[in-house]
Structures are given as structure tokens and as C-alpha cells.
Length: 600
Image 1: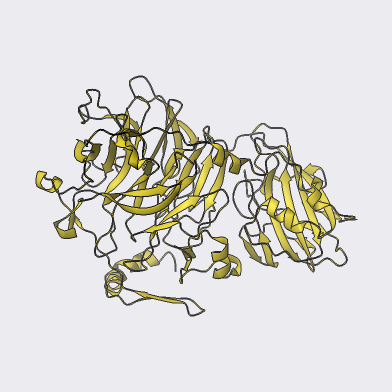
Image 2: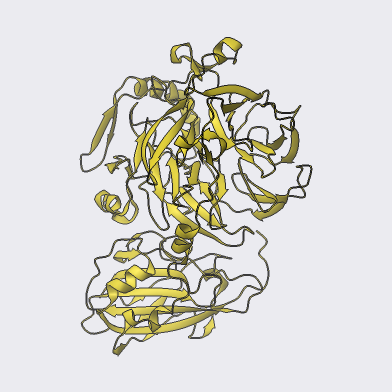
């Protein structure tokens, strides 16, 4: 049936669109939850940015908006090098352009120079004289020469998850020196099969270490760190087809291990009626595990690149505030977005979102001259905005009375480093005071002996399936829990590969290849937690190629209770919940090393 569906679309799409536009939209769940909203498919037509239309662009008093460069076609993401060189990605053309303003007249000097070609290139970032660029599946880096051109592109990762609906990867270096890369969802609202979809990834600059920093993010293209607090903020795209005014675009405070609701919960805690969480998790449970948005903005405005105020041009009243491009809606009437907004912060916390530069919607909202995407501060302090509709880079400059400027503040690294170092450099679970127990649990596996070699199929270099485990029942046990760790990993020690708890007392063995999801239905009620990789469920051995074999400690605990602990909890939360409830514990160790680099 799935393969036949595309053939049916031409026949049903016109009637479907008519149905959606009629306002008779109802989404229903088995418990009776229902949403009925009018849904519009409306996108203003693109028109040329004539001189008359350009005069309609509005900015606050003291600011001027002028074209910096034109004729750039699908202009997307902007980054500015320390020397002032400007790099622009063009997804549809599959290249990266270099622009300069050496004479400082507020316009690009001549034609841009193509410095890289990669199909679907989108996200850009600069660090240590290297330009990083990403496509939907690949991450590259190249040295920047004195002339701004790039050396040979080096592939750092070629296995980013498939893109689907949201191929526009974006990235930036955090204050902790790590690369943060946003991976959108493959769909409007679905349970992803790849846990790296709909997340924010955290990647080492060499691409060798990668983890899921935060999840439940439908498509957070725009994100940045507050210059005073160092806290991480991102604007997420809302779910479509809920009506003109739902879902709001979400401003979230991004923190390690947090889950932000998508696809089952949105906004301030609204339930999305159509979807069903995996493992028979109730939506109220999913909601309790999710972080509500901090602020919302007009639905379907489509937030893109985000930057905090910086430089020697904008007045000090903008200090600590952020700017976000809103590319504009295609499914709302009247249209939303097509603007730059200002996010006002006070004491490091966002208070409001308001229009900053408008007028890109023209003819009463029926047409548009720009769809704002890229956003970056030029070296001279002007704000540059890339338009991917007519291919213009606009320059927003402050030309009002001289005043104290925003200045450049480097976000402190402390908040990000503290999160990353949580649980690092601690003893194995079995050697911690939380797991003190008098009894011994007899643990074994039909797939490997204690101290023996783990088969490659259990590793992430191959099938990545969990191994079978068996243990002898412990009298009076009400449940069992598992912690699997690698104490030989670097730089995080020990690396948590598996957390599971509330295994029923009647269960004394687990088969090979358990589901990698928050809750299991066989055995029913088993909950799984967050690994060091940031995923939920089993994450197999993946030691660096050439390392001596790592030791993987499978630690099983018999408990006198069933834990009141939500799915997705981390190791420290699990150990704390188990403290004082452990009747017996057992351990079996498997070894694994990878001698040859995999072909993929």
C-alpha cells in the first residue's frame, strides 16, 4: 500500500486541498481528542524588488535597509569570518559564495567568488580558520586561505540521517568549542525511526564524536547562545495543518538531555491529536517529560537563522537581544513572517518577540519581494540578511545619532561545559554507593561468556542489536534494572550504552535485539533511559578503530520496588531512584575492538 500511495496523489490532491481550505479539518484520537480548524494553503506570489517596493521596507527609526548584493538566486545561510569575509550558501545551486566589501561602501565588491561546490549545501560555520559546511547527509571542513578561498574539503561525517521534509541542516560552534548541528524531522508529525532526526546534535570539531544534545525539535534552524549568560536558545518550526493560528513558532531554551515535545506535544503543552507515542506511552506522560516553549510567535512564520546583537554599530539598547529571520508562511491567510524579528531579553531571559524589519510582503500581503533566511553581523556592525526568493543580501545599518554600541561579548562556556561534564569521570555503577547490595545475582548470556568477545552484530559497526541476557530469579524482587557502561571510553568515562528498568519480576531473560524506544510492550512496561550518545535504548559498542578492545560491563540489579521514574531518565537519575532498593546485583563483561575501518 505504501508504494502505491504516490500514484494516487495526483487524483486525490485537488480534493484534499479543497477540503483543507474549506475549514472542515478534524483530527481525532481514540480517546476523543479532536481539533477542528480552518487550514489555508496560501503563498503570496513572488515579485521583483523594484525601487518602489524597496521603499516600502520598514525598520525602526535610525536604521536604513539597502541592498548589499543582488542576483544571488537561492541565497540561504550567512556567516562572517573574523577578517570580514562573507560566506553564503546556496542550497539550490549547491555552492558556497565568497563576498567582500573591501572599500567599505556598504555594497559587495564585484561578483561573488565560488569557493565550494556540494549538492544541497546549507549550514555554514567558521572556527580556527576553517569553514565548515553541511549538506543533508554530510559534514565537511576546509581551511580558509588568505584570499578567502578554501583548501580541499575534508569529509568529517557522511552518515547524517536522511532528511525527508527538512533537509536544511544548520550549525554553529558553541562557547564550549563543540559544533552544534540541527537535524530536522523527516515529516510533519511522526515517530522517527532514526533517533538523530528532530534533534540538536553535538559534534567534536574533527567529527569523530557525536551525540544527541536535545530531542523533540521538529526543525530548529535558528539557534544561538546568549552573550551574557551563555545559555542556548533556539526557534523551532511548528506543526503544519492545525489551522491559521496553530502551532505557534517556539522559542526554546535548549539543555542537554531535554525533550521538547514534538511530535506529540507542542507549544505550552498542547496535545497533538493525530500521533501516537511509541510503546503505548500515554500522551500525558509524554507531556510530563517535555519542555514547554518559553515564548511563542505567529504560527507558520518559519523561523530561520538567529543571531544575538553584536558589534560597534547597533545601539546599546539592543544588548542581549536576538534577531531572527522569519522566511514566511505558505499555509496561512493572511500570510505570516516575511520579516526580521527582534527577541527582547531582560536579565538573560526572553520577554517578547516583535517585528524589526518588515515590508517584504507587498501589495497588501498578496505578493512578496523576499523570503528572509540568512542573518549575520558584518564586521562593520551592520546586520546582513539573505533573501532566497530574489537572491538579494540586504544590509540593515544604524545611521541614527551616535550612542554607546552593543559591543562584542563572548558567551561564557561554563553553562555548556557543565552540562557536558555531568556524569563524566565517575565510577562504574556497580562501584558507586547508590548500588550497595548484600545479595549476588547470577548473570549470563548465551551470546558471550564473561570476559569474552562480543560479536560484531552487537556493535554499531554492524547490526547494533542488544545481546541476550539471563539471570536467576531473586526472592522478593519486584523488578529488575540494567546499566551497561564502557569505562575505557574517552573523553567521556564511563560511556553509558544502555539503561533499562521496571523489568517485571517474572522476567529473568531478555532476547536479542530489543526495541530502541522509551517503553517496551514485550516485556510490557519496561522503560529505557538516555545513553551518553543521547539516544534511548541500546546503543552498541563503537570504540575508535584501532583501540585495544574496550570492556563493556552489563550490570543487572534486583529491586524491591517498581521505580517511579519517567522514560528517558539518565544514569544518575536511575541510580538515585534505585538507592536503598537493591536486593542483589550481578555483572558480566564483554569485550569489543574494531580493527578495520568500516567501508560505509
